[in-house]
Length: 428
Image (cartoon, rainbow, N blue to C red; front, side):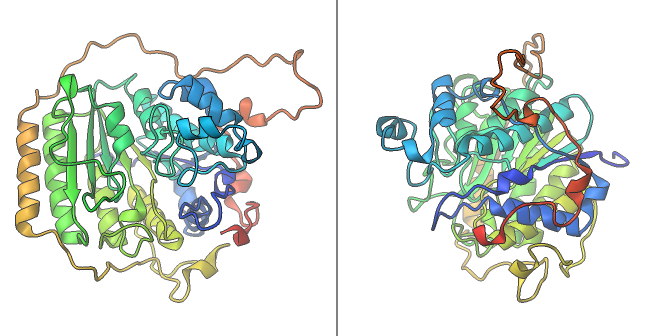
């Protein structure tokens, strides 16, 4: 057992300032709420806090097609009509709208996950947290399910430079389809997704029979669940499967996507998990004592998302948080009880014991078919950073230079105090 984990935490206040549009369920503002709750509980004093670099287009193109990355960089709300064909080609529109600072938003959340992976690779921490990340639906050439850049795939590719095998675990209510698709043909990554499946629920993939192909056959694990699963049922299944996976696969690092839309009462979800139940999964994975990259994901009831990821930050630190929420900039959002707890729901659990046993049995059969801890031909490790040369002579003196192009990890002392974040609560 490690004595004390070094934890790196990534956050940039600008990531919560973007607005997907009226009536859109995705509210990046939840990230500001989470961060201020983390500060209110003084958890920042126990972690290393970093502002992530903004991922360069060439870094994003390590997975995404260069033409798609270029389009995201170029598109703005006022150019949509002129770019109607490309909008359709890259699946931008209602679910994945174009909004102000879209590309910068992608750069920040992807940069956080890349930086997290690099710190783990260089053994500068044991656990790295990027709550802004976890956008698991984005595909190589298109946006999907509120996701534009798949930071998880980029983070995993980074970890693969140093680790023969990486395990990806997803507890979002939606199937982690973009990550699974990216690694469907390789045994270097095992993807394990626990999600709602059936009744035309988005994205419609993730059957237990979908196990990967070619070299990746049996390295994609899907745990399709029905409405109303509760803490007890979920945790029993989760612990059994993850223990078996780690035993068979022997990963060198783990990426854990903690989508909070699997909580009871989520605007788009349909599970009955309490925050304690959700956090128990995080605690369990932490106890495996492997390098761990933790991200956010879905979550559409903002105050519960902030509660959940704050509790999970505490869980990763080994700190039990007081239920009474301390005063903070977003205190009013936690009315009327101002409590950190969110009870499990009252939705009927449609997951019978026999159904869950059948799923567990099928997953274990698939795992028994894999080669134990598959070996790989390790190659020379590519460089971590691609930093374009800044040609100072060729720069336009009237154009403001973004400091983040030059600064990689900046520890901001002022970020820990109230009133520094420019976020307007009315944008919620």
